[in-house]
Image (cartoon, rainbow, N blue to C red; front, side, top):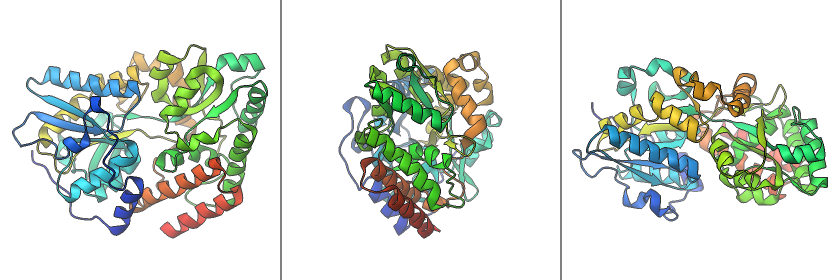
Length: 426
Protein backbone atom coordinates (compact mmCIF):
# COMPACT_ATOMS: atom_id res chain seq x y z
CA UNK A 1 0.00 0.00 0.00
CA UNK A 2 1.40 3.40 -0.93
CA UNK A 3 1.43 6.75 0.76
CA UNK A 4 -1.01 9.37 -0.54
CA UNK A 5 0.00 12.89 0.44
CA UNK A 6 -2.75 15.51 0.42
CA UNK A 7 -3.02 18.37 -2.11
CA UNK A 8 -1.30 21.64 -1.35
CA UNK A 9 -3.98 23.52 0.58
CA UNK A 10 -1.93 25.49 3.08
CA UNK A 11 -3.33 29.00 3.55
CA UNK A 12 -1.89 32.20 4.97
CA UNK A 13 -4.36 32.04 7.84
CA UNK A 14 -3.25 28.52 8.70
CA UNK A 15 0.39 29.51 8.60
CA UNK A 16 -0.37 32.42 10.92
CA UNK A 17 -2.14 30.11 13.35
CA UNK A 18 0.82 27.74 13.30
CA UNK A 19 3.19 30.63 13.90
CA UNK A 20 1.14 31.79 16.86
CA UNK A 21 1.26 28.37 18.52
CA UNK A 22 4.91 27.60 17.95
CA UNK A 23 6.65 30.12 15.70
CA UNK A 24 9.36 27.81 14.41
CA UNK A 25 10.86 27.30 17.87
CA UNK A 26 13.43 24.49 17.81
CA UNK A 27 14.40 24.08 21.46
CA UNK A 28 13.11 22.17 24.45
CA UNK A 29 13.05 18.45 23.68
CA UNK A 30 13.81 15.97 26.43
CA UNK A 31 16.86 13.83 25.61
CA UNK A 32 15.47 10.49 26.77
CA UNK A 33 12.52 10.70 24.37
CA UNK A 34 14.49 11.66 21.29
CA UNK A 35 14.72 15.01 19.50
CA UNK A 36 12.44 16.13 16.71
CA UNK A 37 15.25 18.08 15.06
CA UNK A 38 17.28 14.88 14.74
CA UNK A 39 14.37 12.91 13.32
CA UNK A 40 12.61 15.51 11.21
CA UNK A 41 12.65 13.47 8.05
CA UNK A 42 11.18 10.34 9.59
CA UNK A 43 12.69 7.11 8.32
CA UNK A 44 15.87 7.52 6.31
CA UNK A 45 14.81 5.31 3.38
CA UNK A 46 11.89 3.22 2.23
CA UNK A 47 13.54 -0.03 3.22
CA UNK A 48 14.21 0.84 6.83
CA UNK A 49 12.43 -0.93 9.67
CA UNK A 50 12.60 2.17 11.88
CA UNK A 51 9.64 4.48 12.40
CA UNK A 52 9.56 7.78 14.26
CA UNK A 53 6.57 8.65 16.45
CA UNK A 54 6.15 12.31 17.39
CA UNK A 55 4.18 13.11 20.58
CA UNK A 56 3.93 15.83 23.24
CA UNK A 57 3.66 13.74 26.41
CA UNK A 58 5.68 14.83 29.44
CA UNK A 59 3.72 13.10 32.22
CA UNK A 60 5.62 10.01 33.40
CA UNK A 61 2.67 7.67 32.97
CA UNK A 62 1.84 8.94 29.49
CA UNK A 63 5.48 8.49 28.51
CA UNK A 64 5.31 4.96 29.94
CA UNK A 65 2.44 4.14 27.58
CA UNK A 66 4.59 5.26 24.65
CA UNK A 67 7.44 3.08 25.93
CA UNK A 68 5.08 0.13 26.42
CA UNK A 69 3.81 0.52 22.85
CA UNK A 70 7.40 0.59 21.59
CA UNK A 71 8.18 -2.62 23.48
CA UNK A 72 4.97 -4.30 22.32
CA UNK A 73 5.54 -3.51 18.66
CA UNK A 74 9.22 -4.36 18.62
CA UNK A 75 8.55 -7.67 20.39
CA UNK A 76 5.98 -8.65 17.76
CA UNK A 77 7.96 -7.38 14.75
CA UNK A 78 11.51 -8.67 14.64
CA UNK A 79 13.94 -6.09 13.29
CA UNK A 80 11.55 -3.17 13.71
CA UNK A 81 12.55 -0.15 15.78
CA UNK A 82 10.31 2.58 17.17
CA UNK A 83 11.80 5.99 17.98
CA UNK A 84 9.53 8.01 20.27
CA UNK A 85 10.24 11.71 19.80
CA UNK A 86 9.01 14.31 22.30
CA UNK A 87 7.96 17.71 20.93
CA UNK A 88 6.51 20.29 23.35
CA UNK A 89 2.76 20.71 22.99
CA UNK A 90 2.92 24.33 21.90
CA UNK A 91 5.50 23.54 19.22
CA UNK A 92 4.15 20.33 17.71
CA UNK A 93 1.79 21.78 15.08
CA UNK A 94 4.20 24.45 13.87
CA UNK A 95 7.06 21.96 13.53
CA UNK A 96 4.87 19.54 11.65
CA UNK A 97 3.55 22.20 9.24
CA UNK A 98 7.02 23.66 8.74
CA UNK A 99 8.39 20.18 8.02
CA UNK A 100 5.62 19.48 5.54
CA UNK A 101 6.67 22.55 3.55
CA UNK A 102 9.93 20.72 2.83
CA UNK A 103 8.21 17.33 2.52
CA UNK A 104 9.69 15.96 5.73
CA UNK A 105 8.17 14.74 8.96
CA UNK A 106 7.59 11.74 11.22
CA UNK A 107 6.09 8.39 10.33
CA UNK A 108 3.43 8.55 13.06
CA UNK A 109 1.87 11.65 14.61
CA UNK A 110 0.16 11.61 18.03
CA UNK A 111 -1.58 14.95 18.46
CA UNK A 112 -4.48 16.81 20.03
CA UNK A 113 -7.46 15.24 18.25
CA UNK A 114 -9.12 18.63 17.86
CA UNK A 115 -6.25 19.67 15.58
CA UNK A 116 -6.93 17.00 12.97
CA UNK A 117 -8.41 19.42 10.45
CA UNK A 118 -5.65 21.94 11.02
CA UNK A 119 -2.98 19.32 10.38
CA UNK A 120 -4.80 17.83 7.39
CA UNK A 121 -5.15 21.29 5.85
CA UNK A 122 -1.46 21.83 6.56
CA UNK A 123 -0.52 18.72 4.56
CA UNK A 124 0.88 17.03 7.67
CA UNK A 125 -1.25 13.87 7.65
CA UNK A 126 -1.67 11.22 4.99
CA UNK A 127 -5.18 9.96 4.19
CA UNK A 128 -5.72 6.54 5.76
CA UNK A 129 -8.88 5.52 3.87
CA UNK A 130 -7.34 2.42 2.29
CA UNK A 131 -5.83 1.24 5.55
CA UNK A 132 -9.02 1.87 7.49
CA UNK A 133 -11.15 0.10 4.88
CA UNK A 134 -8.95 -2.99 5.19
CA UNK A 135 -8.80 -2.89 9.01
CA UNK A 136 -10.84 -5.85 10.27
CA UNK A 137 -11.63 -4.17 13.59
CA UNK A 138 -12.78 -0.81 12.22
CA UNK A 139 -16.36 -1.68 13.21
CA UNK A 140 -15.36 -1.59 16.89
CA UNK A 141 -14.82 2.19 16.65
CA UNK A 142 -17.60 4.80 16.74
CA UNK A 143 -17.72 7.34 13.93
CA UNK A 144 -17.01 10.15 16.40
CA UNK A 145 -13.37 9.07 16.86
CA UNK A 146 -12.55 8.97 13.14
CA UNK A 147 -11.28 12.37 11.99
CA UNK A 148 -12.15 13.16 8.39
CA UNK A 149 -11.92 16.15 6.08
CA UNK A 150 -13.47 16.52 2.63
CA UNK A 151 -14.51 12.87 2.67
CA UNK A 152 -11.11 11.41 3.56
CA UNK A 153 -10.09 9.97 6.93
CA UNK A 154 -6.80 11.28 8.34
CA UNK A 155 -6.64 10.00 11.91
CA UNK A 156 -8.41 7.93 14.55
CA UNK A 157 -8.53 8.26 18.33
CA UNK A 158 -7.56 5.09 20.16
CA UNK A 159 -9.22 6.38 23.33
CA UNK A 160 -11.40 9.15 24.72
CA UNK A 161 -10.27 11.59 27.40
CA UNK A 162 -12.37 14.10 29.28
CA UNK A 163 -12.33 16.31 32.34
CA UNK A 164 -13.79 15.59 35.76
CA UNK A 165 -13.55 17.14 39.22
CA UNK A 166 -10.94 15.38 41.33
CA UNK A 167 -11.26 15.96 45.07
CA UNK A 168 -9.13 15.46 48.17
CA UNK A 169 -11.47 13.47 50.41
CA UNK A 170 -9.37 14.18 53.51
CA UNK A 171 -9.71 17.95 53.12
CA UNK A 172 -13.42 17.74 52.36
CA UNK A 173 -13.99 15.60 55.45
CA UNK A 174 -12.05 18.07 57.58
CA UNK A 175 -14.15 21.05 56.51
CA UNK A 176 -17.41 19.09 56.46
CA UNK A 177 -18.46 19.21 52.80
CA UNK A 178 -19.49 16.56 50.30
CA UNK A 179 -18.14 16.33 46.75
CA UNK A 180 -20.12 19.01 44.88
CA UNK A 181 -22.85 18.23 42.39
CA UNK A 182 -23.61 21.82 41.34
CA UNK A 183 -21.76 25.10 40.84
CA UNK A 184 -23.37 26.54 43.97
CA UNK A 185 -22.11 23.58 46.01
CA UNK A 186 -18.65 23.93 44.46
CA UNK A 187 -18.44 27.65 45.27
CA UNK A 188 -19.59 27.01 48.82
CA UNK A 189 -17.00 24.27 49.23
CA UNK A 190 -14.26 26.52 47.87
CA UNK A 191 -15.12 29.19 50.44
CA UNK A 192 -14.84 26.65 53.25
CA UNK A 193 -11.57 25.07 52.19
CA UNK A 194 -9.91 28.45 51.63
CA UNK A 195 -11.11 29.62 55.07
CA UNK A 196 -9.49 26.48 56.50
CA UNK A 197 -6.13 27.43 54.95
CA UNK A 198 -6.14 25.19 51.87
CA UNK A 199 -5.95 26.02 48.19
CA UNK A 200 -9.26 25.58 46.40
CA UNK A 201 -8.81 24.32 42.86
CA UNK A 202 -6.16 23.78 40.21
CA UNK A 203 -6.64 24.00 36.46
CA UNK A 204 -4.83 25.11 33.31
CA UNK A 205 -4.92 28.75 32.28
CA UNK A 206 -2.57 28.54 29.31
CA UNK A 207 -3.44 30.96 26.49
CA UNK A 208 -3.93 28.21 23.91
CA UNK A 209 -6.14 25.21 23.16
CA UNK A 210 -5.44 23.70 26.60
CA UNK A 211 -6.94 26.80 28.20
CA UNK A 212 -9.97 26.70 25.90
CA UNK A 213 -10.41 22.99 26.66
CA UNK A 214 -10.49 23.65 30.40
CA UNK A 215 -12.48 26.85 30.21
CA UNK A 216 -15.31 25.61 28.00
CA UNK A 217 -17.16 23.53 30.65
CA UNK A 218 -17.47 26.56 32.94
CA UNK A 219 -18.49 28.88 30.09
CA UNK A 220 -21.11 26.44 28.85
CA UNK A 221 -22.40 25.91 32.40
CA UNK A 222 -23.74 29.46 32.25
CA UNK A 223 -25.37 28.89 28.86
CA UNK A 224 -22.62 29.79 26.40
CA UNK A 225 -22.33 27.81 23.17
CA UNK A 226 -20.51 28.24 19.87
CA UNK A 227 -23.67 27.89 17.80
CA UNK A 228 -24.97 31.24 19.10
CA UNK A 229 -22.27 32.96 21.19
CA UNK A 230 -23.67 35.57 23.59
CA UNK A 231 -21.95 37.99 25.94
CA UNK A 232 -23.94 37.52 29.15
CA UNK A 233 -23.19 33.82 29.78
CA UNK A 234 -19.49 34.52 29.31
CA UNK A 235 -19.63 37.50 31.65
CA UNK A 236 -21.22 35.32 34.32
CA UNK A 237 -18.67 32.54 33.87
CA UNK A 238 -15.68 34.89 33.87
CA UNK A 239 -17.00 36.67 36.96
CA UNK A 240 -17.02 33.35 38.81
CA UNK A 241 -13.45 32.60 37.75
CA UNK A 242 -12.24 35.99 38.93
CA UNK A 243 -14.06 35.47 42.21
CA UNK A 244 -11.98 32.32 42.58
CA UNK A 245 -8.72 34.19 42.00
CA UNK A 246 -9.76 37.12 44.22
CA UNK A 247 -10.60 34.77 47.10
CA UNK A 248 -7.43 32.73 46.74
CA UNK A 249 -9.27 29.60 45.65
CA UNK A 250 -7.40 29.67 42.32
CA UNK A 251 -3.88 30.95 41.89
CA UNK A 252 -3.08 33.28 39.01
CA UNK A 253 -0.02 31.08 38.42
CA UNK A 254 -2.42 28.83 36.53
CA UNK A 255 -1.81 31.00 33.44
CA UNK A 256 1.59 29.29 33.12
CA UNK A 257 0.37 25.75 33.80
CA UNK A 258 -0.34 23.06 31.27
CA UNK A 259 -2.59 20.23 32.44
CA UNK A 260 0.28 18.30 34.05
CA UNK A 261 1.41 20.90 36.60
CA UNK A 262 -2.06 21.53 38.13
CA UNK A 263 -2.51 17.85 38.85
CA UNK A 264 0.94 17.51 40.33
CA UNK A 265 0.04 20.43 42.58
CA UNK A 266 -3.22 18.76 43.57
CA UNK A 267 -1.46 15.44 44.21
CA UNK A 268 0.92 17.18 46.62
CA UNK A 269 -2.00 17.28 49.06
CA UNK A 270 -2.82 20.90 49.92
CA UNK A 271 -5.53 21.52 47.31
CA UNK A 272 -9.17 20.48 47.60
CA UNK A 273 -10.07 20.14 43.91
CA UNK A 274 -8.55 19.70 40.47
CA UNK A 275 -10.25 20.12 37.14
CA UNK A 276 -8.39 17.42 35.27
CA UNK A 277 -8.77 14.26 33.29
CA UNK A 278 -9.07 10.51 33.47
CA UNK A 279 -5.50 10.26 32.18
CA UNK A 280 -4.25 11.36 35.61
CA UNK A 281 -5.29 8.13 37.33
CA UNK A 282 -1.79 6.70 37.19
CA UNK A 283 -0.26 9.87 38.58
CA UNK A 284 -2.79 9.93 41.43
CA UNK A 285 -2.08 6.32 42.35
CA UNK A 286 1.68 6.86 42.26
CA UNK A 287 1.97 10.19 44.06
CA UNK A 288 -1.10 11.07 46.16
CA UNK A 289 -0.84 9.95 49.81
CA UNK A 290 -4.39 10.95 50.69
CA UNK A 291 -7.87 9.64 49.94
CA UNK A 292 -9.16 11.02 46.67
CA UNK A 293 -12.04 10.58 44.27
CA UNK A 294 -13.67 12.00 41.15
CA UNK A 295 -17.13 13.36 40.41
CA UNK A 296 -18.45 14.72 37.12
CA UNK A 297 -17.72 18.40 36.63
CA UNK A 298 -20.71 20.11 38.31
CA UNK A 299 -21.74 22.13 35.26
CA UNK A 300 -25.49 21.49 35.28
CA UNK A 301 -27.70 20.65 32.34
CA UNK A 302 -26.28 23.20 29.92
CA UNK A 303 -22.65 22.55 30.75
CA UNK A 304 -20.65 20.53 28.26
CA UNK A 305 -17.42 18.58 28.70
CA UNK A 306 -15.36 18.00 25.59
CA UNK A 307 -14.76 14.38 24.59
CA UNK A 308 -11.15 14.68 23.59
CA UNK A 309 -8.05 12.62 23.45
CA UNK A 310 -5.15 12.25 21.10
CA UNK A 311 -5.59 11.49 17.42
CA UNK A 312 -3.15 9.12 15.74
CA UNK A 313 -2.26 9.31 12.09
CA UNK A 314 0.46 8.67 9.52
CA UNK A 315 2.77 11.49 8.51
CA UNK A 316 2.15 12.72 4.98
CA UNK A 317 5.82 12.25 4.13
CA UNK A 318 6.51 9.01 5.96
CA UNK A 319 9.05 6.86 4.15
CA UNK A 320 7.42 3.72 5.51
CA UNK A 321 3.65 4.25 5.80
CA UNK A 322 2.85 0.53 5.78
CA UNK A 323 5.01 -0.06 8.87
CA UNK A 324 3.55 3.07 10.44
CA UNK A 325 0.04 1.70 9.96
CA UNK A 326 1.11 -1.68 11.33
CA UNK A 327 2.39 0.11 14.45
CA UNK A 328 -0.92 1.95 14.90
CA UNK A 329 -3.05 -1.13 14.32
CA UNK A 330 -1.03 -3.18 16.83
CA UNK A 331 -0.81 -0.48 19.54
CA UNK A 332 -3.25 2.41 19.67
CA UNK A 333 -5.97 0.62 17.72
CA UNK A 334 -5.66 -2.86 19.22
CA UNK A 335 -7.52 -4.20 22.24
CA UNK A 336 -4.22 -4.94 23.97
CA UNK A 337 -2.91 -1.46 23.31
CA UNK A 338 -6.07 0.27 24.50
CA UNK A 339 -6.09 -1.72 27.73
CA UNK A 340 -2.47 -0.69 28.32
CA UNK A 341 -3.52 2.97 28.12
CA UNK A 342 -6.54 2.32 30.36
CA UNK A 343 -4.41 0.58 32.97
CA UNK A 344 -1.42 2.94 33.02
CA UNK A 345 -3.12 6.28 32.40
CA UNK A 346 -6.85 5.75 32.78
CA UNK A 347 -7.80 6.50 29.17
CA UNK A 348 -11.23 5.26 28.13
CA UNK A 349 -10.91 2.85 25.17
CA UNK A 350 -12.54 3.86 21.91
CA UNK A 351 -13.03 0.23 20.90
CA UNK A 352 -16.39 -1.16 22.03
CA UNK A 353 -14.90 -4.51 23.02
CA UNK A 354 -12.04 -2.97 25.02
CA UNK A 355 -14.43 -0.56 26.77
CA UNK A 356 -16.40 -3.55 28.08
CA UNK A 357 -13.35 -5.28 29.51
CA UNK A 358 -13.38 -5.88 33.29
CA UNK A 359 -10.27 -3.73 33.64
CA UNK A 360 -12.42 -0.77 32.59
CA UNK A 361 -15.89 -1.56 33.92
CA UNK A 362 -14.67 -2.43 37.42
CA UNK A 363 -12.78 0.86 37.88
CA UNK A 364 -14.70 3.14 40.28
CA UNK A 365 -12.80 6.28 39.20
CA UNK A 366 -13.69 5.79 35.56
CA UNK A 367 -17.38 5.66 36.49
CA UNK A 368 -17.49 9.43 37.08
CA UNK A 369 -16.03 10.08 33.66
CA UNK A 370 -18.42 7.61 32.04
CA UNK A 371 -21.30 9.48 33.68
CA UNK A 372 -20.05 12.75 32.18
CA UNK A 373 -19.86 11.18 28.73
CA UNK A 374 -23.54 10.28 28.94
CA UNK A 375 -24.83 13.49 30.52
CA UNK A 376 -22.55 16.30 29.33
CA UNK A 377 -20.28 14.93 26.61
CA UNK A 378 -19.64 17.28 23.69
CA UNK A 379 -17.91 16.95 20.34
CA UNK A 380 -14.37 18.32 20.29
CA UNK A 381 -13.94 20.69 18.56
CA UNK A 382 -17.43 22.15 18.33
CA UNK A 383 -19.09 21.32 14.99
CA UNK A 384 -20.21 24.96 14.87
CA UNK A 385 -16.61 25.99 14.09
CA UNK A 386 -15.45 25.60 10.50
CA UNK A 387 -12.46 23.23 10.23
CA UNK A 388 -10.19 25.94 8.86
CA UNK A 389 -11.07 28.20 11.83
CA UNK A 390 -10.57 25.71 14.69
CA UNK A 391 -6.97 26.73 15.43
CA UNK A 392 -7.91 30.42 15.52
CA UNK A 393 -10.98 29.78 17.67
CA UNK A 394 -9.03 27.78 20.24
CA UNK A 395 -6.26 30.36 20.37
CA UNK A 396 -8.61 33.36 20.68
CA UNK A 397 -10.69 31.81 23.46
CA UNK A 398 -7.66 30.34 25.21
CA UNK A 399 -5.98 33.73 25.31
CA UNK A 400 -9.05 35.38 26.81
CA UNK A 401 -9.44 32.58 29.36
CA UNK A 402 -5.84 33.13 30.42
CA UNK A 403 -6.34 36.90 30.64
CA UNK A 404 -9.38 36.43 32.89
CA UNK A 405 -7.42 34.23 35.30
CA UNK A 406 -4.46 36.60 35.21
CA UNK A 407 -6.68 39.64 35.78
CA UNK A 408 -5.70 41.48 32.60
CA UNK A 409 -9.32 41.61 31.40
CA UNK A 410 -12.52 42.34 33.28
CA UNK A 411 -15.31 39.78 32.82
CA UNK A 412 -17.30 42.23 30.66
CA UNK A 413 -14.36 43.07 28.41
CA UNK A 414 -13.34 39.42 28.14
CA UNK A 415 -16.85 38.36 27.12
CA UNK A 416 -17.05 41.06 24.46
CA UNK A 417 -13.63 40.08 23.10
CA UNK A 418 -14.62 36.43 22.72
CA UNK A 419 -17.89 37.18 20.91
CA UNK A 420 -16.19 39.70 18.62
CA UNK A 421 -13.38 37.28 17.80
CA UNK A 422 -15.80 34.46 17.01
CA UNK A 423 -17.84 36.71 14.75
CA UNK A 424 -14.67 37.47 12.81
CA UNK A 425 -14.14 33.77 12.09
CA UNK A 426 -17.41 33.30 10.22
